[in-house]
Image (cartoon, rainbow, N blue to C red; front, side, top):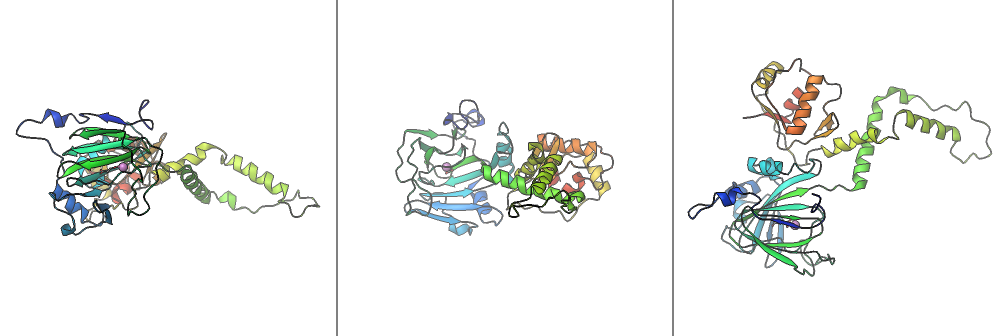
Length: 374
Ligand code: SIN
Ligand code: CO
């Protein structure tokens, strides 16, 4: 992190050693997700997918009818599937290896599959990315060029003048880290080439401030004392009627201080709640066979509880936010501890909990934000 994060590219050969360890003359380890499965996923509404063809360039958004996706042996196409951690346990597993970076920064795992010659063209991203080669080989060419102008005549973001500075062929198990704004072009060398990319979120400072401030403003709803009307018994006759009264300024600044609204601690819960919001397309299918509170307690004493793959959990000190809500506020110490474990380990080992009806833990289970391990 000190040497490379946000600073310079890093090529890691054999980042997933299993590929090399398990390769021999007859057998090779391959991506745990097949072409067929990816095509099937790209036909679903709930999966964000894109199909890009080169020669000539074309770009389409999914869902795709299976027939509209080229056969694996065809040339110059690539299919991109976003948010795969929610749809395949292997993708969730690989994303979990990147928890040396805070959860609040992790976005999702994108899988690309391509025919020979396929790629998205020379471009740059505004985010960091780890590109993991999972099947076949891909040639990567990169550049630290400052001319990042895009070709206005193409349906996708392709650089006007790409000047390759370094290039490598990545084999399965190899990984390339690129900081933001490094120009890159990856071309599939084998049919069914798969690259899995771990992407990051970089909200603007404006977005963080605005989202934190909305939530802070909303939190004032629960303070009845603030309903009192402004009164100014000390107001004197004025010669500057057009000016905002001094009395109002004094009272507001006292009130801001009293509520701690001038302190970062009051502002951060809103930011944490915002960053814990699930992706807009996240779907939580509530099971038709939900347990009663007693059934839930009983099952929890035997089975681990996990975060649903689309659930986001973040902590701010001892407070835990899940899918945009504070789950620890007003909860028993047992429930708070349970949430802290869910936040840190994304799972809660089987345990006996006391009174949990009306607890945020049971509510999150009812909303399918938390699920029992199979
Ligand atoms: C790809 O997997 O083909 C594209 C990934 C990227 O360039 O960010
Ligand atoms: Co890119």
